[in-house]
Length: 112
Image (tube, rainbow, N blue to C red; front, top):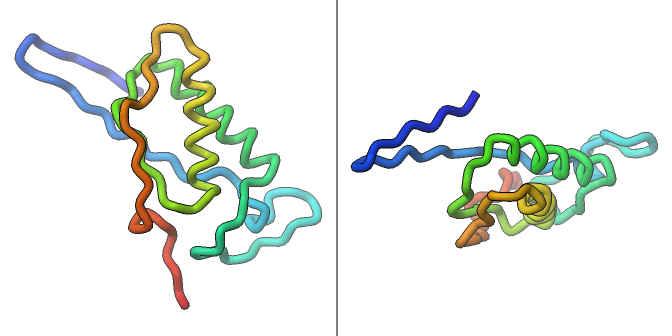
């Protein structure tokens, strides 16, 4: 799916987008119900942690370096990035992000 071709005078950039893993309000686990979260700062569920870890393993297969990581200020997004990058960092010859940015403008929509 990813191809990287470079010449001495050009660089190829790849943008990887990842949604946060299942949260305790997403209804993805038995006993939980689906609730709109908006800016409510709910954590990942155990399912969401496993999803983020698996995403990190899958991304690490492409052996791409990560220059920067951007997340919203919500903990479910930050924890997803943490677990993804943790799995990525376990792979030899991969590069961890040099910069990490958190910005409220990346938050999900908030309807009041």
